[in-house]
Amino acid sequence: MTTAAATAASFAGQVTPFLTSGHQLYVALCRDTMRRLHTQSPVTPAQIQLLEQHGNRADSWDTVYTSGSLATLIRVRNCTFRGRVHLGTNAFMIKMTSYVLFSYRIVTGSFTKDVMVDNVPFPSGCYNTTIVDSFVLDDALVQDTFLLHRTYVSHGAVVVGCGTITCSGTDVTNGNGTALKVGVEIGGREIAMFADMPFHLAAVVGETRGNVSELKAYEDLLLRCPKIRDVFVGDAAVLEDSVVSNSTILSSPAEVSSILGFSQVHSSILQWNAHVHSGSSVERSFLCDCSRVERHGVVMDSLLGPNTAIAEGECTSTFLGPFVGFHHQAMIVAAFWPRGRGNVGYGANVGSNHTLKAPDQELWPGEGVFFGLSVSIKYPSNFTNAAYSVIATGVSTLPQKLDMPFALINTPGHNIPDLSPAINEIYPG
Image (tube, rainbow, N blue to C red; front, side, top):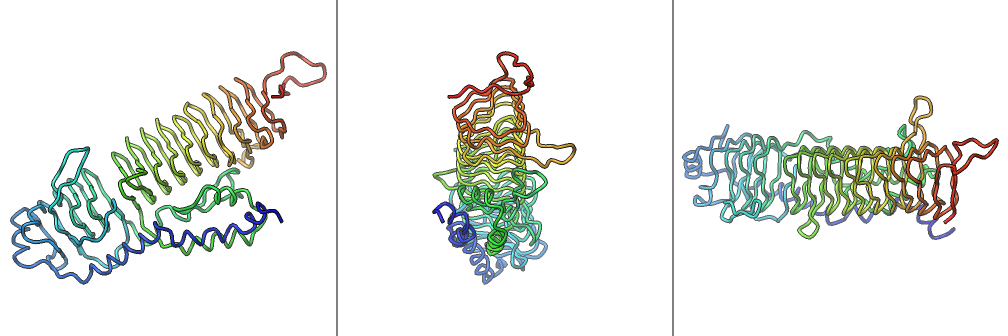
């Protein structure tokens, strides 16, 4: 058995190291911290008096806990506390994470430092916000937010001007375990995704469909990952003017991820330095590191490889490899393109995947294939052995298997008797 074949045959075992990744260990540490915070004492009568003097109200002060002194609680103003609220401990530094809490309480912290919002310093603390069953750690800023519910706001995090930040229940997993229906839209090439999933493993899972027992072992291993709830937002990530649900956004100060400009992200995972901007929509998808969706791009049930960018167009049920350029109004549907490094030009219709009514066909492009302006690609087609070929402007291709790399696929330059004009002309590279 070759090395590549052996790797494909045992891909389920490649999940195991990620069960103890830095991301998974951090989630476990957050949970442990929340458990330890349950040993805090409720606010004292003197603290209650100060909080009420600054416009704060609580359904019951017996379920409000703080590690802050009287001096630091001056930075808690005009807030409403319900359930159990914890204000503070110096635990760790990350942006914001939403979880189902282990019981109902509120914790607030010690607020002494300033935080930066658009490079302008603001005093940390809690202002004009309804906080329910949540944790707000030291030197975080929560301001002008309608509802903060079952949410863990870590040290130095910033939550400003939001509508609602909530956790809906125990059956939400931040998009982990979601099956991406790449290729054939009716199913058969599903890839169950998880936050730390490397691109090469996703490609192997998508390509290896004959080993049923190995696929089942892979999916069973995913069930062992620690579950996080609703939205996990990593360190230094930026979410602004957007709607995000049931998703994981991995980020770090060196590789900042962002969701900006009235975009929507649902049931998806963004890895480090991934971006969704300018009114774009991402649903049930996986964005590898350094990928992006912008300018009203639409991505559904798809995986974007590293350094792949989609703007203005639609990408549905597609596995896009690395370094794919897709910067104009176009469409790619039901394609499995793990080698990537190609281009989708303006007006390209890469997606005639319906035979009669069912979307039961797919396309396998080769590495570096260039889909030119306004091309129309009919399915099923296989271009895996036509690496770095170019499909010229306005060309329609019939269902076919093409085995000629570095070729130019064009319309016929002249008529040939007894040959359909729909047959493409191929110029070898």
